[in-house]
Length: 464
Image (cartoon, rainbow, N blue to C red; front, side, top):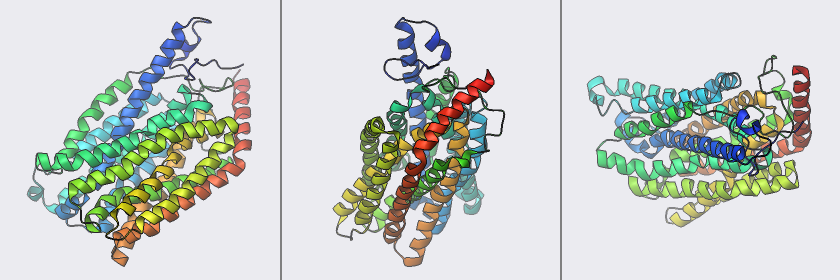
C-alpha cells in the first residue's frame, strides 16, 4: 500500500489533512502550507540554536580576560555544552520517538533560551566582582551546560519531523534549508555580537538579547500540528514506536558506524575552527574584534549558505542516479575540504587573502555533509527509531568531535605556541576522517536501505 504525498514532494503536515479528500486540490495546498510553516519555525529555531552557541567564540578574548583563563580552559568552556548535549541527546531522542516531537523540540528551545539569558545575568544585573571571578565563571559555565541540554532535544526531534514532511528524494534539500540555520546563525553571531557588545558596553548583555526570540519561537512550535510518523515513506509503515528496545540492533545496521565516524570527524573540524577562528584573526593577522568577527562570518557563514543551498540540490540530483551516489559524493567533498582547509590554515602573517579564500572553500565543501547526514539516516533507519538513532549518532559524534575539537586545538596551541598552526594540524585531519567515514557508509548503504524498507513493511504486517 503506497503513501500519497503532495505534488510538490512535501508530505502532509497532518495525516488527516493528507488523506481526507481523494481528488481535491485543497488538501494538498493545506498540507504544503502546513509543511512550509513548520519548516519555517524549525529553520528559525535552528538559526537561534547556532547563534546562541556561537556567541562565546566571538567574544572569547573578552571572556578570557574577564575570567582569567587560557586557550585550553577556553576550549573546555566551549566543549562544556557539547558534552552535555551529547549525553542528553540519547534519552531525549528516545523521548522524541515516544512523545510528540514538537513538544520535545519546543521545550528544548525554551530551556536553552532561558539558560542563554542566565549567561548574561552576572555582568549586567549583578557585577562579576560582586560575587567573585571564580563564582561568576562557574555560573557562566553552568549556563553553557544548560544551553547544551536544551539544544540536545532539538536535532533528534526535528530530524525525525523533517523526514515525515518530505520524501527521500527531497530530504537533502529540505534538510539543507533546515541546516541553513547553521550559517545564518553564524553570520548573525559574527556580525552582530561584537557590535552589540560595544554598543551595549558589555559582552554579557548580548546573551540577554539573544534569549528573547527563542522564547517566542518555542511557544509557536508547541502549537503546531505535527505529521504522522512515516507519512512520507514510499510504503505504508508502522507510525508508533516499536515495543522492543529501540537501542537494540541499531549498530547492526552497518551504515551507522560510518555515519558516527563521519559525524565525529566533521564536528571535530567544525567546532575547532568555529571556536578559534576569530581569535586567530586577532592574534595572527592583527585584526580588531569587530573586523575579525565579520571576516569569521564571511569564512564560516557565507560559505555555509552557498554550500548548503547548492549542496542540497546537488545531493538530491545524485540520489536520482542511486541512493549510494549521495553518500559517495559527500565523501569526496569532505576529502576536498581537508585539502583546501590545509592550504588556508598554512597562510603566513602577510597572506590574509590565502587564509580567507581557502578556509572559505574548505568550509563550503565540508558543510555539505550537514545536508546529507539526516537524509542518509532516514534511508537506513525505520521511522519509529529515527529520533533515537539521530540522538545516538549525535551523542557519539559530539563527544568525540564537538567536544574534542576545541579541547585538542586549544591544548595543541598552548603546547606549540601557535593557535593557527594548531588548527592547521587538527582541522584537515578531521575533515579527512569524516570523508573516510562516509566511504565506509557508502559500501553498505544500499543493503541497509533495502532492509529498512523490508523491516518497515514487516512492522505494518505484525501490527495488523
